[in-house]
Image 1 (spheres, rainbow, N blue to C red):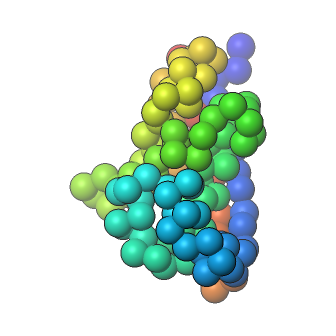
Image 2 (image 1 turned 90 degrees about the vertical axis):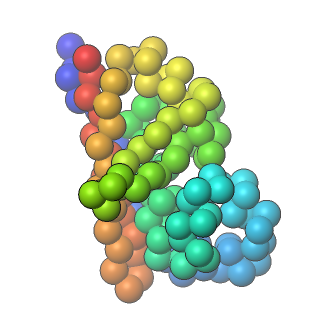
Length: 123
């Protein structure tokens, strides 16, 4: 039996910036939770890192972008400053159905790219 599940995603920051410029609030409200929008304050690198994290979580859950909504995966901030993942709706149902009881995430970005890596513990 597999005891971990892994997902990773890399995205161009300019792609997120262009999408934000083109679609504005509509894009933000479709993809990000209110807390994510407030934290990022329109900053493309932070938005891109969270977008990559959402995709990485979906990969770790084995669904890709089908079957789970963008806002059902939320990137949070712990008191320590480290990022965390909170699942909602179908995402939490999927995690439970495959035995994932904890997700860890790492985010990073450079001038051009944002990357996220997610590891899920299968109980």
